[in-house]
Length: 286
Image 1 (cartoon, rainbow, N blue to C red):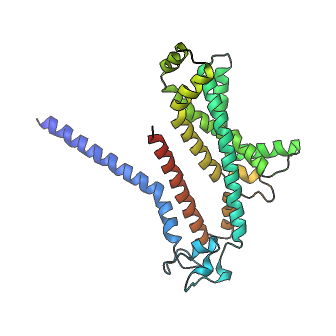
Image 2 (image 1 turned 90 degrees about the vertical axis):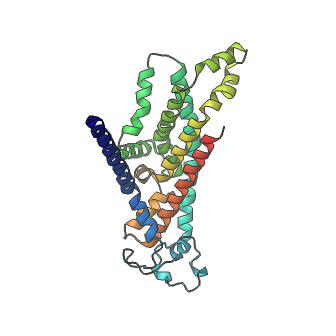
Image 3 (image 1 turned 120 degrees about the vertical axis):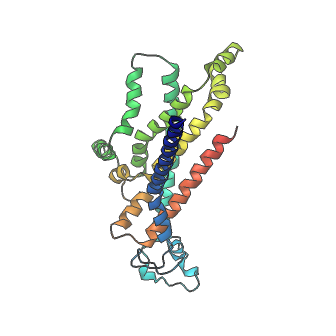
């Protein structure tokens, strides 16, 4: 009886320790984000760590709406975003790059996962390792390599080189997600489709792709977020007039952390949450 009670106590303390560890882990991960969101509403234009009051003016400033705030206390020379047009252009460039690379990477990654899962050939293990290489390689090494490659071939640095650079590693992320989905699929449905007279393309369109849809959507959303967030590789292969949002924020950070940067970061966090919620919603739909 005493041994049983001792085991129960040890098990209870173990679960408590595990729960405490989980709480501390999430606090460690999300506390910096909470600090950024909190100080994005600080009215102090000089020192963001000194609370001066609650305001939405920094959000209005980055959107070019600061003049619409009644009783605004932010001077025009205190605003850190010199040009709202430059910020909007950076956002537009990021969206163009992310949408293009996501579309192409989803097609290539899905096709590669299907090919390696359905066909057996001698170099199959080599290709599988090759798909993992861009994910393992340090970003700075990949960025320098891409820069040397583009300069050697005479490419003009711009949105085109950014898109090509992002495709070199985003296809791997889609491949990993779709491959994991393929491992859990039931091949008997494809065999039944073939027995009933359906061709390969019909089976692919009506049997395989519907089952792969959650993996494809998940891989596409992951590729989109990574493309929107990439800084290191983009820094090396971006040209004049092709500044993306991470590069724009990085250029602002060189002169100090100001409330406008916190506001932009908060909007990015909100955007990421919307994308993640959309992915969860699509995965739950049948």
